[in-house]
Length: 299
Ligand SMILES: Nc1ncnc2c1ncn2[C@@H]1O[C@H](COP(=O)(O)OP(=O)(O)O)[C@@H](O)[C@H]1O
Ligand SMILES: [Mg+2]
Image (cartoon, rainbow, N blue to C red; front, side, top):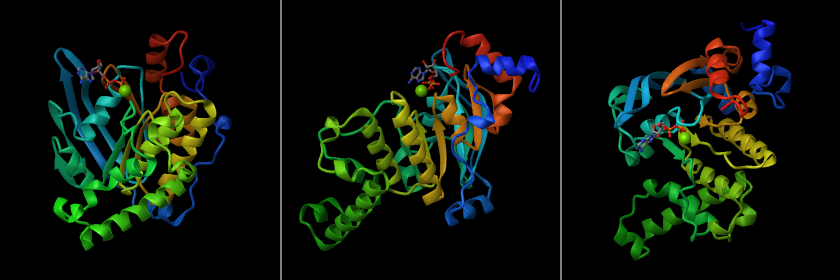
């Protein structure tokens, strides 16, 4: 079907964007990006992951390999298992079967706080911020695991604690400036518009410069302009820090323009996996979406 008029008609029906609709080039040229593309080994490998809640299979025999430095999007209809996949990788859910290999280390489930030390950070589908705290206080929470000073040292402002405070302050300031959040630094997070709150959550995940960043619908609920801004920040975060990103996003135009790799879940199973072009023309994807979406967007 791909390439045939039937395939094209189906893709149009699914509102899959075609190549010329890409607005921004994906060719990156920074030294960090060139370095990561030179070592394009897998940073994360999921092997035969299954997870069920009661009788509901959230994930069934999902295997996925994510290469270092890529932006890998996971798409699929609501309930397909996308958040479960990220929850398994970030240690929140323990899979019933299967294994996870992160940067050479194999595990079934890792405690989320241990994963922070291994360089994994995430955002949540539903905002998980401290609304009553300022923007910098929320962002510095992303560096808590890096503190060495004990509680007493912090309580009495002993030298190591003061030095850490200063270092954390500098890293937070740099992140606020990178994500254009400087003008909002004195605001309580709860007073910010939703799109900016999502950006604060990205700042908190990014401030520790993780090697693997998991973003669960970072653009959900945003206006088209806010989505484009967020996509640009995600792209430049990858470029500046040379990190690997797994992204869950419903806006298929953004997914196709931003991703190097797309995996498609449907009813907890992976039905397609490849480059955006490969996935876009995969008959299994077209079939699944024609079956599940008559009048809605693709995912
Ligand atoms: N904590 C949970 N308890 C019970 N069922 C869950 C839980 N998390 C996910 N599920 C179920 O697993 C399936 C996949 O959910 P989810 O991973 O959230 O999908 P998606 O993010 O693709 O919308 C759904 O049927 C959902 O109801
Ligand atoms: Mg979800």
